[in-house]
Image 1 (tube, rainbow, N blue to C red):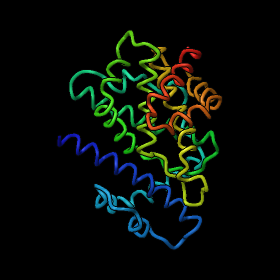
Image 2: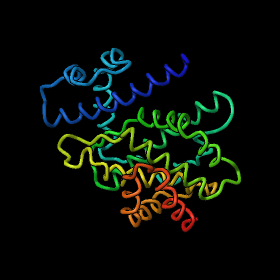
Image 3: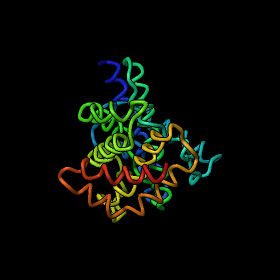
Length: 256
């Protein structure tokens, strides 16, 4: 339990440091007189906030040095090989294996989601890694039966699709994407679906194919665009997981 608490605090701290980083960079352009301490005071309460206060000046100095060597707009290299299968993210076994799977899941989902957002031309999105940690916990708690079936070596397409459907619904419920105040599409559920569905489908493809290819994410993006209306319609139903399963099963069957 203590180990998990420590992990939760660390993930939340990383999210807030990212927000602080973005806010500092923005303040250099818009509010030259605002200090890192002023920015921290405007952030909502969260575990580990006191640690963040001590780190503010160091973060600002580190950013100044780093940005002198690395262009601000330089993207992370993320492709289909980043995504792993459900078996990697939700392994059976002892606590160490499960914690390792959760850590891999939230990190991969964070970077994959940012890659999708970058492809859509969204600047400075806030993607909360802690939200994906909550998604992982919700999947373990609410959809253990679907995960057990989907992670079997001989799992069927329908079983994998059902687990991925639950995963997409949980991602949407926990809303890991927070766009800037000036972005008019902030809070749009349809936009969240467009961003998260490709990531979840890519995970399903990696699960069904046992390997991750560099173009899996691109394929998933194109496929979910084609079935965009059907996915949105299914997610809007009361029994979203059940309605979404045949949609994803069809995509998985045709793409593998």
